[in-house]
Length: 318
Image 1 (spheres, helix red, strand yellow):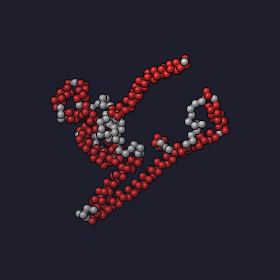
Image 2 (cartoon, rainbow, N blue to C red):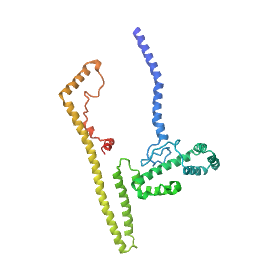
Image 3 (cartoon, rainbow, N blue to C red):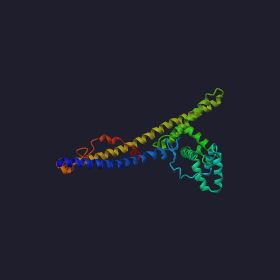
Image 4 (spheres, helix red, strand yellow):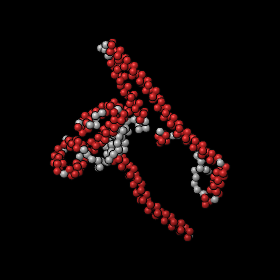
């Protein structure tokens, strides 16, 4: 009877402890999910400048971009402020007049008020500017001749600035949003492929123009031959770059194989075997040493796993 009462008491104590721990566990779980879900999905916005969504740091679609300051910390240029006020004035002109007066007398208070009344406009303009800045960085890197002079237009003529970037984006869109794993050498070859493809198409259209003279046709044929010849050379360059990347992966794989061979040699050592088997026997036969193990020994029997080269290993080899 006494034993039964004790068991009942222990059960009651256990239930009480569980009930006390449930709120704490729920709080921890919600805290973790909030930090991973709420901020990352809304305010943090990771990625490149290709986003057309509403995050605050310019992200969404992959592509070239700059992760930067949050909305609250970002400084607005005078050009951006003018554009914000222009957008706000389309549906709230009275508020714009008040803000303009405040802008003349108290700049700090003006900026605080602007962030309150023109929050959507600021969000849209700063996000758009980050996107275009990211695109421009890509163009200046890979097609500097075509991107020359664009940066100077940002404050002088923002519409022309965006128009010129949009023109280049239409031309190189398929490359701008390629994954960042593409090497710089490979990307430069891809850029040249696009340029040659456009040039070939233009020359072909001119060549088949029914009004063209025979003399002009022969000149165009010479140009077409040059383009086709370079396209041929481009194909060889692509194969060489691809083979170099494969060789680097093989080197990583070979290093992994060598490491596994050394590991096997260690386990083949009779002294090491004696040590491991004695330890395993002790775990099996002595209750105080019993513990959970995935296998009887510590070596990896799934040797084929080592052939799965991660991107990180591949990048380290490069």
